[in-house]
Length: 224
Image (spheres, rainbow, N blue to C red):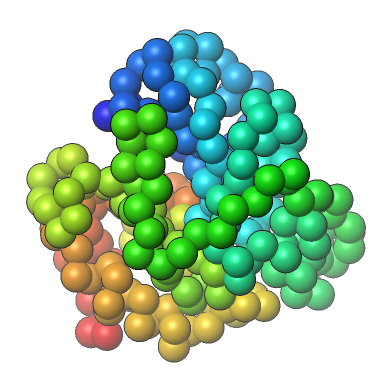
């Protein structure tokens, strides 16, 4: 499987492209701010054709370019229904303090075709199978995507964790829709149950593994 990732925008959110191989169809995960040119360059380099946009959650730094990309390539966006309202009203997921830092204004629109992500679903895109786990805590509609054999081990098992899990940390839970207790449940039931060899592609920062985070992440070492 081909995995291409790059950080973009002022908040350096990671955008990922997943495809069975070069020259095939791909999914675009979390196209946030300022992804247009770097995304187009990587699509050309790897000869990829977009099939869908997938969002780990609705915050603008992960979804800002979803509408323009969906329009340009004629593809749908997939998002959990609890976070769908943020696609047209991004400030509702930020709270007054963060909104004030952005000048109280952030224009976005919902893509023309929106499809709901469901917990436990498996999405099929041109030979690429992507599983969906609802992982609330950072937002009510946060999800993690996974590829590879369910429950399997080895380097072929990937988790795209959005802002649920980072290298050395976890996503904040103090914004509207965040819930610390739900985050702890998510970490206990959806993260710590994964094999140590699972590669984690987070929404911000470097790639890590479940085993590494189990050993060094203070939020996972405290015992959940």
